[in-house]
Length: 156
Image 1 (cartoon, helix red, strand yellow):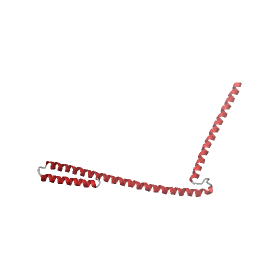
Image 2 (cartoon, helix red, strand yellow):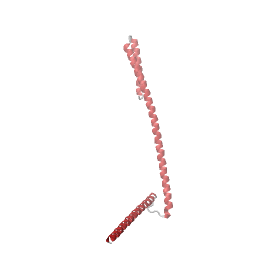
Image 3 (cartoon, helix red, strand yellow):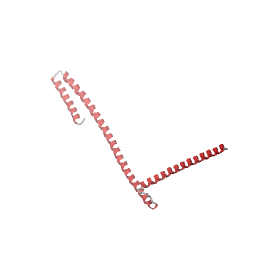
Image 4 (spheres, helix red, strand yellow):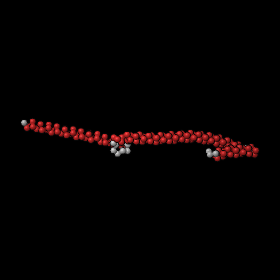
C-alpha cells in the first residue's frame, strides 16, 4: 500500500515539475515576443523621429518618413552621379596612359634606330680611308645625335 502512495506522490511531483517547466517556457517565449515588438516599435518611432507615436500624429510621421526617403534617394542619386563621373575620369586616364605608353614605345624604337644608325656611321668614320669620308661620317653622326637630343628634350 505504501508503494502505491509513493508511486502516486512521485507521479504527482513529476506532473507538477512538467507544468512548471512548461509555464516557464511559455513566459520566456512571451517575453521574447514582447521584446521583439517593443524593439520594432521603438525602431519605427526612432526612424520617424517621434519618441512616442500617437494615432493622430501617424499621418505626419508617415509624410516625414517619405520626405526623408526622398532626401536620402536624392543623396544616393548624387553619389551615383559622382561615382559615374569618377569612373569616366578613370577610364579616360587609362586611355591617356595607353596612348602615352604607345608614344613612348614609338620614341624608344626611333631612338634605338637612331643609335644603330649612329653606330654604323661611327664605324664608317673609323674605317674611312680619306678625310672627306671621315668628315661626312662624322656629320652623319652629329645629325643622328641631334635627332636623339631633340627626342630627349621632347620628354622621352
